[in-house]
Length: 317
Ligand code: AMP
Ligand code: MN
Ligand code: MN
Image (tube, rainbow, N blue to C red):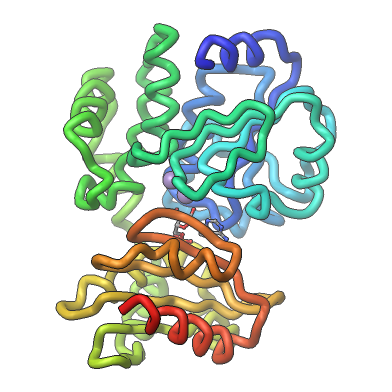
């Protein structure tokens, strides 16, 4: 399988690396590392309309400054590789058309809910991040991990493990992190790029949402609703919502944390749990993810979506 993927990359003349909507450190870090390996003939697609919507903290990643967006990507590739993209629903608009019409497609992922929608599916649900999956692939075929490749992979592993806190962090994760560190990357600087130097409104927006969170079911469920009005009030970018759901889950006694964001088509939902399997909730709404972190989009008004989620959560608590 690993050899097959590498040969397919070598035999292709133009490669498009697709990241998922609402891009995070894992999808962007993995794409950056893969582009570092493939070189000139590969492009990265970040599914945003323009540069303004790009999450600032990940601008340090190699090659990301030259990434294409939904407005300027063209259909000119003979191989598409989706990284950290749990389902083809997370490839939107013209990018989806390019994916569907492509002769060769590969998925490199770690979501246990990924059904394998590409022609070649390299999915390892037990690994912490797509970056860890890509590391495994590189190692299998003896590809040298350069400092540049290590920068992207380290970013993916760091952010998807919540700085090595979550239960997806295994002894092997630490071993890989150590090997990446040995290439000479500046691990503390990467952590600073990902977690420090936030705009003032980022912190004020997050604090507002946490302060206004609501509790139900004996405080076992906590939720925050992000309306368009609140987004406007803080001139919030999409990336400002990252981490709120984790903060809410960290409250003692909370079993399930929901963050619902009002979007054009309904509500975009983030779920974080303590013990229960979050994908048992998202399964009902055609979403997916991991045991303790999952998401979905519900085509309902935000309060109605919340009601449906709580109804479903009650059956699991
Ligand atoms: P988020 O709350 O957006 O950070 O997502 C949490 C986890 O669930 C991530 O691993 C996402 O990739 C995954 N996820 C979010 N939304 C969806 C969806 N609609 N379908 C499949 N997986 C999703
Ligand atoms: Mn991701
Ligand atoms: Mn991931």
